[in-house]
Image (cartoon, rainbow over all chains, first blue to last red; front, side, top):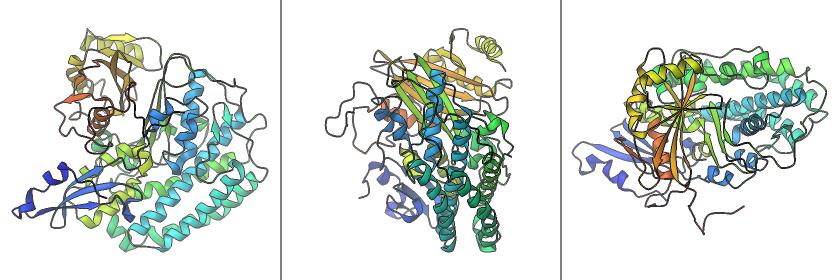
Length: 380
Length: 152
């Protein structure tokens, strides 16, 4: 049921037929919003005058929930925020607790963590690629993308015991050691995947219909990207360097060789290219590490009950969608006093109104597609 | 700039600011009345150039509320944290949504979750909570909802 609000009524100055403006609802149940996002769009003919997001359909108040969970428990909830990069969410929380307690993570665990992060990034970008092409009317890429994503999910299932909400990272390391087949299967996947990524370019990137729909759509200037608090591929598509892995390296990212992908177009096509090339960089990282997993413990020895000292701790990591910040305020107890998740999707969504104004309603899907919105991440 | 240099520079801008020790970033405590002018200077000053507001939130300390702004510069890569103490019964602070556009959404979230009134905000209304929600602010410590809240 749509929300009948005062705002919707007020947003229709032309409801009496004078200005010709009218309001339509996209969502909360709409195939192009990929979740329960509700957009109230004011249109004049086919031109967008205003896009107004209505959030909260999947709000679970994770921040409040975390206040009553211990430092070991709250990580499990965070997998449910950005479910496509749940490893990276868990990683951010584990890093924040480790920073507070000054836990030294064993080298083996650090390498496994980075490997998992990058596999997650590929899986997430895969889903984005398939879904975005589907939004624009191409159905085949969806099946290609899911075929590859499935093999990553299988690898995850074998090692972590779950396919989507893995909860594999814990304070001090990872939950259990990798499966004996892990290295073999990842190498197999990489070998196959490298051929596939070129196939994607042939199938979609070079397609002239696709390029016409993407180029010049939803242009975002570098200044606006920063001012709106965007992060991840959205800012890098506008040429702003924002990769947390490069700027504020965590784990072992400072020892790895990879490039920060930058495009200067600022339009949907630039954001598309950034994600495609990011997948190739992730492959590069995995190739560097897969044969170099050091022997040793997969988890540091920690106390059964974790207590963070009094103070404030903030960690930033790069998820598939951008910068995730975890801000813990501790009073010295076993549960956080206040926790704030700075989710990348929330800020990335706020720019939608800005880039959509003045363009045609048909292009809205191309803009939303390349913002890569995950609704549980926005609502939290 | 290093934390020490930032400290000297910000003391010049706002002599009334006090600094908190500890923590990885320089933390400044200010009066809510000074916030708007300080924010404008932080954004405009050539040597500071804090153009990226990456986190805006609030903490309920039971006796008072505390606004927390995390700012960083995409040019110089330095970071500061600004805190402002608000009266819990009538929390009010000036909006910064015209300086950093991201604040518009984040302030709306803080408005509904903590009940902070942002003066001169262009569009201050509920974002996440359902329409018709009145009075109770979910992220405050004294919030009780016997029906929907699950105690763990």
